[in-house]
Image 1: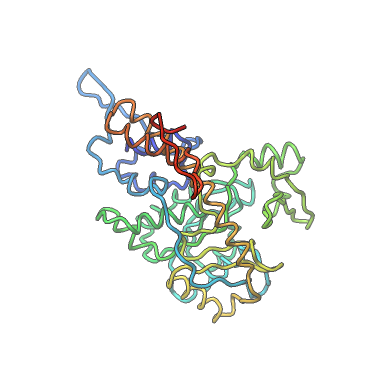
Image 2: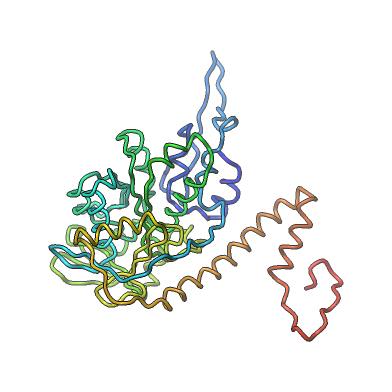
Length: 388
């Protein structure tokens, strides 16, 4: 296992929970055990009457590093088109999940896709799961992402290696789209199968995803609802509450503060709300009532969206409030500064053992903490290393 992954991601609670490192691990020694990040499977080797720990990672090419989106900073892909959209078919709906389903169903019908890797919700026990779907019927019947966490790439190897799919869509959170972008940017020949198979990435707007324990603790125990009463979960654009929609049409609400206490720890360091690394991103923010905002960032997804419109499965409509989207995008500056402080923590720890790193740690400290001086005032001479 990469020491960078352990020191810069796991130990700082930066893990996105996407599962791409587990999927890419050639030794299959990374696995999920219910924690905030994957764990390393400790193995032993026995020779004769003696046995000892087996280091499976010493001669590995560190595919986990190549796959982890949290080891890099990501500049936003510039939007090519921003528009309002809603599903147009037997049932008209502006829900982000319904818009995504329409685009995927049209892509599968036209032969643009042969499968989709996505997060879905088991309707019987409300447990989120990674799933591979390959038919229009499976796409339409899926519940879609419900703001509950599961490692979406847990199903990636099934799609690529077991089912030999060559034109895949990946649907998930913005961090999952970052993982796809990183795989696509890699030049490692051993990851070529992934690069060739993933055709398009779709992301839902996201400011955090919740651990599945919230269903048992809040919905079942606190609200007194049974799992089979729940049809879906919704989070409105203002994210002031989570809505629990029942099959009888009634709606129960979970206060934002309560829901956010179940947020995955790695979400705190995420700086992407609007799927800025995805080919296409969908969300309620900035869209008129009954519509979703659709952000197309690459030519590939422009083709998918136009195909859905031509097949009359997607309808485009009024203008989107771009100012609200820009305001949400600016929020990432606060997260980026938080990540800079985390990077400083790592650098300062390294500096304790490596004198070469001390100078860089001091520069980083000064850059983050120094108060800018006015343009007309001379800068005060520093009598210490940081000037504080």
